[in-house]
Image 1 (cartoon, rainbow, N blue to C red):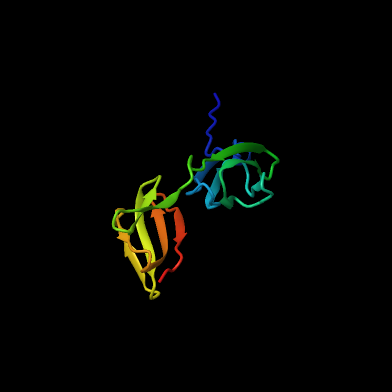
Image 2 (cartoon, helix red, strand yellow; image 1 turned 60 degrees about the vertical axis):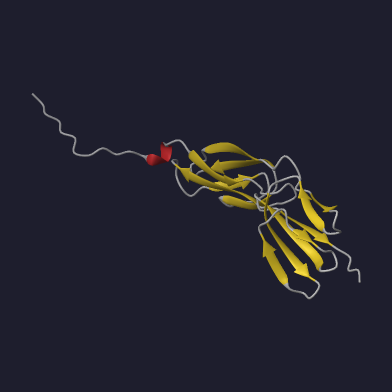
Length: 162
């Protein structure tokens, strides 16, 4: 009668499959390149090599516009895994225009919800308002910066008339 006792087990993690978690942020505006992708790799055997379609070799890429990005991750044993990440740009461009009212002042008109406006008056003072129905006199306002709920900003410059 033989009794065999195993006191420990050895597990070689280097043969584990690569697992990739993706943390991404889509671009905030249609004309912006402020998207980002960060990869977190587990499994396999570190260190890991990152080969992005952008040419980067880091675990993250930044300043991205909308589109498809591919990364091939390779561990120290030569095991590879390819991941595709799609960043989505907003569907429509943030557009702002002026609407002249009956009393010769102007109102901001936009195709998206407005979160705030900054305007610079003829004396160089900067003012902030959250009132999307804000009316202003073009003789007293030089520039208007309008920001929508996604953080996109559009600028309107007015000619100074006396």
